[in-house]
Image 1 (cartoon, rainbow, N blue to C red):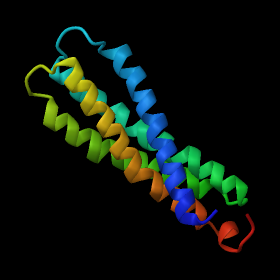
Image 2 (cartoon, rainbow, N blue to C red):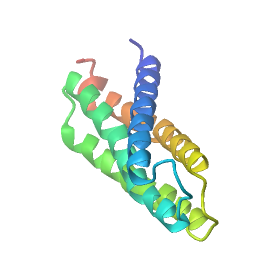
Image 3 (cartoon, one colour):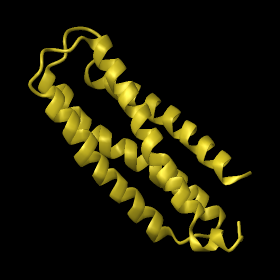
Image 4 (cartoon, helix red, strand yellow):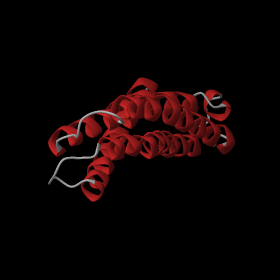
Length: 143
């Protein structure tokens, strides 16, 4: 399978898994009855950003790296770096955007969270997958 197809496959899979996890956590945290407190909604973007990025990068990175016998340390460091950047940029930005707003309708909040999860996965997963594919062992053609 060519690298572009691998990146696409892993990205779509990451998006689907992270959206499913986001749905589960949204229902556990907020449910669908009653308005959502803006500060609670905003704060939830912080762990969501970190975990979506971490899971969307470390799992495909390790799986691809393992197939090519790539070293684990750069994959894990890349995943942690992307997760921390996502926490700061995505989570921090969303917090600033929503923390002092009006109460949020559950359906609106759910849509925002699902879209955010899918978009964040679509941004970070290709970075991790391309990095794992470019690892020294894989670059020498030892898949």
